Length: 74
Image (cartoon, rainbow, N blue to C red; front, top):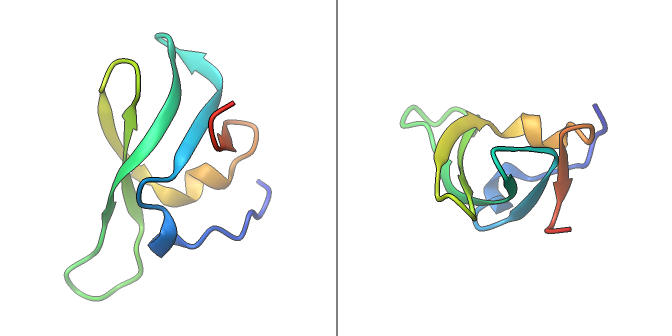
């Protein structure tokens, strides 16, 4: 994994492109950054597929995997 120096606090509304699209879902938007109630560091985000509006929760560090994700829409 490449270290893109992503700041989890600045991920809200960021745009991402899947390197290998599935189900015609290529472009994504971070629609929520999940802040733990106990004050621990941010771990998860909610991504939304632009085309289908499907959402799912994942660890934000997965976005640093350049074999799967490219920052921005391409």
